[in-house]
Length: 105
Image 1: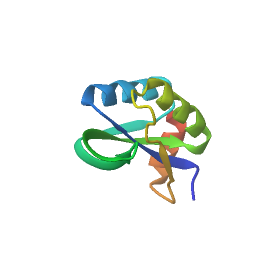
Image 2: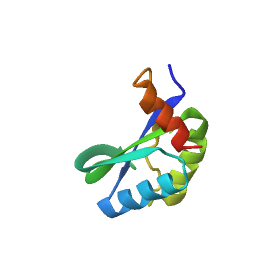
Image 3: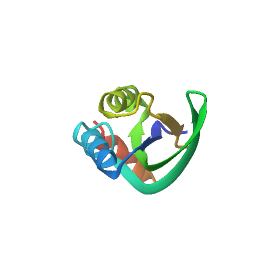
Image 4: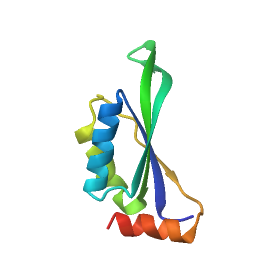
């Protein structure tokens, strides 16, 4: 296991996804944010089943930056309860993992 993390969140528009991605990179909270447009999400919210068109953000960061990144997502996001899930990176290219670490310092 490394100290690197992939964080997932969704946004209601491509404009919001880009705004959040740029802010996370500018604040050095993430090394890279991939924006996957046009996903469909089905979920339960306030007792009802909802369907929404969203964008998925795949964010690369470190364990040490996760709390600050999570706080930034809550600050920047339009959703009342934005998705924020961190997944540990078991292994990977040593050079890429090092780059993630250097990018968020």
